[in-house]
View: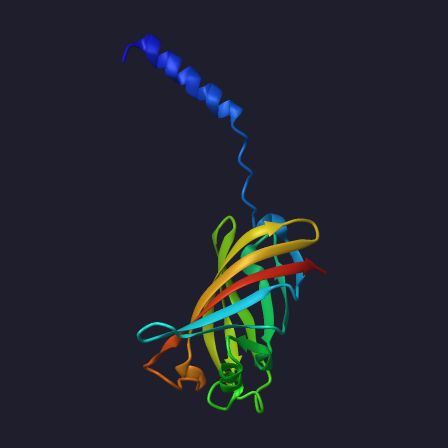
Length: 194
């Protein structure tokens, strides 16, 4: 390619680039520093695979929690979350009743599932891994969730949270191996500034 044609192509690409709208900068965890309460409009979805397809999927209608993002050092951030298993929702009432029964959540004896962070590790400008103590049915284990900041403004903040938790250590392994021992969590969490 001769120099004149190369220069013309370079100029054309530069003009096209200037004509395109500037891409918005991704939100940053440090910029979203503050204390938040988890909004009831958040979504806590879970699924359990089944051999041959199908499986169990549902969500929780009642939960509460709070978190704090430390802008100076994201690793000093913290999360506290409480889930109320009695509020579990699934496609059929019989599945909901089974999940509330002593075989799974045992809601007559254990009204909450709690999570308290012990470590936050930033993995990118808008992402982090959160490790902490998850307590269900009186058993506590260390679990980890991947968090990605999706939106924020002066009043609220939104995240996607993903995590995989094994059921057996919490005494909820009924139905394995037909049903997977792993529960996949897919959550959209909105926080309101406190």
